[in-house]
Image (cartoon, rainbow, N blue to C red; front, top):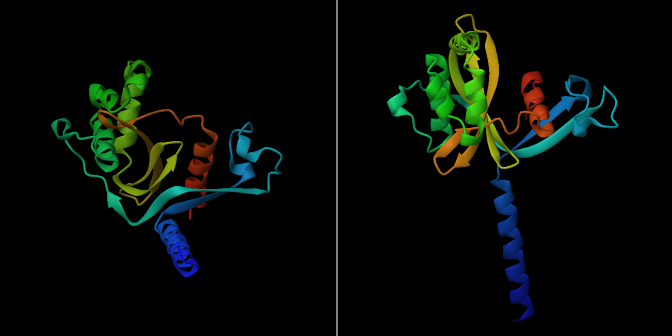
Length: 199
């Protein structure tokens, strides 16, 4: 191959690679070390409380946010993360325990069923979700192969509450999972969302 053609091919390949990287949405999550609750978090080791820690992950902050529609159980659909979120939120607001359990990956269902076998826990959960007000999706990120949706509830007084839903893609669709419950990266992301450190 002539030298000029080789150079042209190389330039095109580099341009294509650069263009693809520009099209990949990312979020940087930055927190103060002292805001991280777990001292054992590996991301803050050997750092002082006043230091900042940042990580950049695939994801996107939505502006404007996207309202989460409330649905009935027969309408539940886990074919996309957004539809799975509607099923999760609707199930919790309705207090339908079998539906709440169905929203989880099979490996988590026994633990979730045990958790909601306590009537007081079930009632507290239902009241919590009902008091969130209007719920919208404000963004998403990916952590270790899982998709984390950021949601915000705004009540009648205008008070906002930030929550998240971690989803795993399964043969039955996108299902909720507790897999990141003690994950160091998830804790940093969660902290950044609550302290205004997501950009």
